[in-house]
Amino acid sequence: MMAKSEHPTQQRVFRMIVYCVWVMCLVPQIAWAKVNYKQGDPVTLYVNKVGPYHNPQETYHYYTLPVCRPKEVHHKSLSLGEVLDGDRMAESLYEIKFRENTEKKTLCGLTLTEKEVDQLREAIEELYYFEFVLDDIPIWGFVGYMEESGFLPHSHKVGLWTHLDFNIEYNGDSVIFANVSVKDSKPVPLEEGGGGAGHGAVGSASGLALTFTYSVRWFESPLSHARRAERLRDHSFFPKTLEIHWLSIINSLVLVVLLLGFVIIILMRVLKNDFARYNVEEEGGCDDLDQGDNGWKIIHTDVFRFPPYKSLLCAVLGVGAQFLTLATGIIVMALLGMFNVHRHGAINSAAIVLYALTSCVSGYCSCSFYTQIHGQRWVWNIILTSSLFSAPLFLTWSVVNSVHWWSGSTQALPASTVLLLLGAWVLVGFPLTVIGGIVGKNRAGNFQAPCRTRNIARQIPTQPWYKHTAVHMAIGGFLPFSAISVELYYIFATVWGREHYTLYGILLCVFAILLSVGACISVALTYFLLSGEDYRWWWRSVLSTGSTGLFIFVYSVFYYRNRSSMSGLVQSAEFFGYSLLTALVFSLMLGTVSFWASLAFIRYIYRSLKMD
Image (cartoon, rainbow, N blue to C red; front, side, top):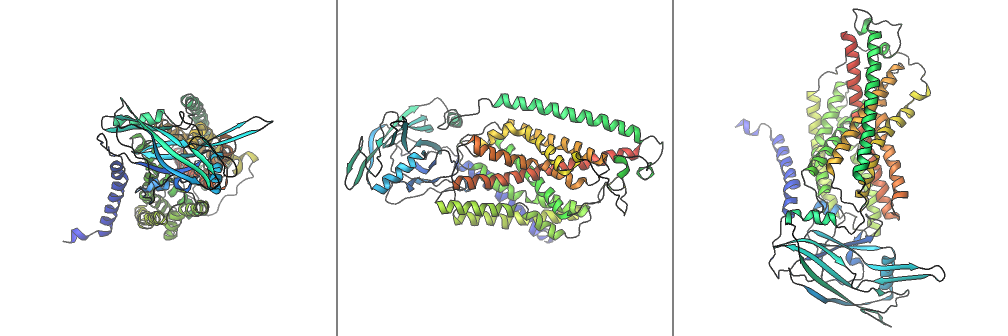
């Protein structure tokens, strides 16, 4: 009887983890289940959002525009990832039946006031596009048409599309692809001041009368339902910029391999000479070495002296290990095909669930190492670890979400979603951090140091300018950044643009290259630091390669100004707020890799010196 209730807490945690994995893996599969139609069955078309073409994260509900809408708006039940992605799907007035063509069917008639006409004009002038969803397939199109011509005289024409042609492809009993076209229709001119007349429009003193129509045409497709993502990937409403991807990645890969080879070969040759010079005596350990020598040998009694701010250092290492695990998990899941262009926000849901589940990794790594280096305030260490990233995240999200809420954007999270995310952190993330910390504290052994540390610290000689922290940060940050600069553009084009990233194999290779370059550069910089008889390598190793985050943020500013057309308060707040968090994540990950690589290197050289 005692065996069944021996560890009730662990059993509850296990059940919670299993449930979270079920939510992450099974629910998207249910949402992605194939829908079988019979001829004449209704196919629901959801209207989703509108927004400026050049500001991907500035989106508003489609029904905020003066368009045809039902008397009662019924919203579709959305997943967490869809809500985070700004989706707000609602049923529309479009009546589409499976494999039945429709020609110029009237959707509705509207009489627009002067204010509503001005609202549409402003939306068209800002290049507003709309997004519809049909059977989980996104459909994009522009709200209207704008033409600028001539200088003297200057011509400025704005027109509204009142007729849409839906072209839908099917295979058997399933929908394969859908898009919208306006090539066979003419826009209704919208004159400034609320006037306008033309095809489908009648101007009057009471307003502008419009008649909205649509056509539906079905085409048979040879693609099966399982391969319909290929159709959407090959045909996109947004421009493609990934044609030179392979050539750029190969070029970057060759440069990185040459860089790594150069660093490794030079470093091994220098170490070989050092060992030959230091191990002249036949006998003697670390404490018997000639005190008249200089270089890294002479600081053997100080190199393992524990650093200041132990708790913060261990928290950085713990959260960095968590994000390394999270990034690897996301890439592996992508390689397994769990994310594709049809699953709205699936990667957002997976990232949130994985972040909560991997909190145990941060707690374990942080508290375990904190105990090894004789840290006493392990409770404070766990709290610091759990808030090191979550606190900046909450602060940034509060500012960005407030801006979205003020502008009425769909990117503003509803209260229910906020409570759900808060509950995930309070009920899953934080408890797992505590559990991981307790396990790490209890399983922590002694710190493995090949040499004893003396009570009195050795005086550090004056260092030349090229060994200062700022110089090492510039070198250690720039080289890893140069290894991913090409791929970084495509990632930014995906996150802050319209691309659908599918080359996850290349992303995995680039991620491995980034970590390898960071580790090698950190080892080289640590060796140069120790050669100058400076044993303060603990924080230096974290900052040297962790400064890559600063370069990434600088690149984000460059991308915003020179590689995108984003503008406005809403988009700028979103872009720079989350770019800062991205830079922080990269700093934590690379700082962790850099530290452990330097620690392994230092243990190796001093252990080898003592054994000879």
